[in-house]
Image (cartoon, rainbow, N blue to C red; front, side, top):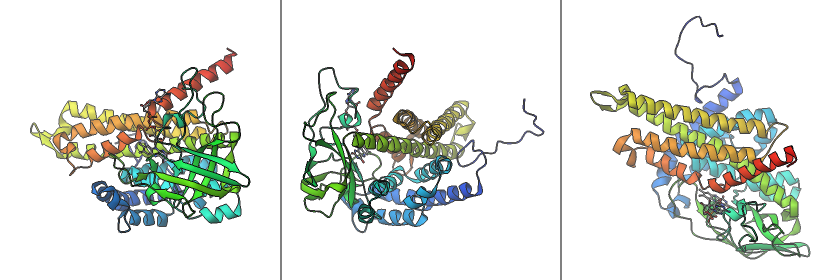
Length: 425
Ligand SMILES: Cc1cc2nc3c(=O)[nH]c(=O)nc-3n(C[C@H](O)[C@H](O)[C@H](O)COP(=O)(O)OP(=O)(O)OC[C@H]3O[C@@H](n4cnc5c(N)ncnc54)[C@H](O)[C@@H]3O)c2cc1C
């Protein structure tokens, strides 16, 4: 039983049912909220209405957003490296959720930009660290003919007797060099403004591209874009997350010293597993922020809009809808943070955990943005209000960083494998 002396209104924080934060956490949350409201949201609104080319041009407001995120230090890799696991599991969700209430695309571009530098630091090679530090990066993995096939890294979802598609991009090792030819998909986030990439590429180590199970041998290569043979396609035109530009990268006989191939063979598979585990986990906290933004906008609107003689919140049906949104946002946050807890515990990290929160949160975020838009009536559909952008941003997340159905199939396969292993079946 609880002993309650007085019945008051609930104490809610930025993140809803928020337990007290430490002074440091509170300061980080406030700083991320300011950045979201004063910088990310207004700039993303402008970018959303610009053409793809204008959005990445030298005079685009995107650069101001990038500079201000950098100046805030909130996404600083060196700062992140100083956090222990306990701090990471508490602080990173606060930063991502808060920033994403301003804009998902600008949050994600700042995350993905750090992938090559993070990898160079993890490898620990001084030349690589120098080459990739402070460089805007991207994460290149999918190809025109390898979307879900790439995500299905261990071929659990390949039809019996079949194998995955031939790659449009491949690497081979020649002496002390790695040689890359072909092209990425047009979906590489941040590519139009990137200076380098962390690439996961199909590789023939001398026994062909395919493994016995039908998946590909991979190699992880850090590629600076100032080397001969690298070129870019046009920025992709798409709905949703328009502040996160995508584009193709072409490789024409690109030759790099072998040390740039930072993971080979099984180590490259492991590295991809680690990258996807991290990215899926971050997607969940990011789209918790998008769902929250939709809820907060709806909460304000239902108190302003008058129909039937009263603000629409006074109608019982609207109250029920609003409470449904609140519950879903809380459920998204709980799931996203539980996975952070697990991944930064001694039992983690594991892709199963991250796929669980990524698929759950993005699906519920899409539902929340759609249901919140409904509360705006016709206004929700217009570009004068924020709802249609939030809906488009959420829609893209169902395919981004692994399409939700293939992620769910892989997660279910992992659950079954774990059960068989545990029970000796
Ligand atoms: C906003 C956004 C950002 C992205 N950023 C990046 C990035 O930074 N880097 C990068 O490399 N890529 C990126 N991607 C690409 C993304 O990872 C792929 O779009 C995704 O993996 C799906 O691949 P696809 O689009 O080729 O779909 P397909 O693979 O063609 O899938 C089409 C449909 O077929 C179904 N399907 C496919 N295979 C199976 C199967 N075995 N069993 C059952 N169903 C199946 C899928 O469920 C899906 O519904 C991004 C995508 C988006 C939308």
